[in-house]
Length: 88
Image (tube, rainbow, N blue to C red; front, side, top):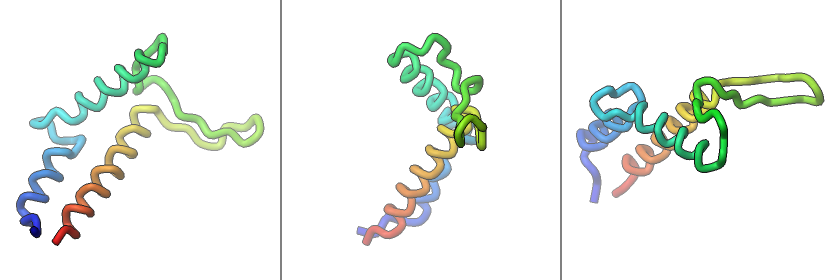
């Protein structure tokens, strides 16, 4: 059964991090904080923690954990939407 494009667009909009109505950004922050606390991090604030890439002793790239989570989430949502769009 083909899913109507209007339904797919509604789902995509609802899952968007920038959608204040759905509270997606707040939910993501809460989930990340919960995961960090569950793993005994003393400081569970993703906007102040960093993902760092080293080459030897040199930092080559870095970003906040929060930004990493948002980008990962966006890719997951894009993949999910792509599956919905190709369903017959």
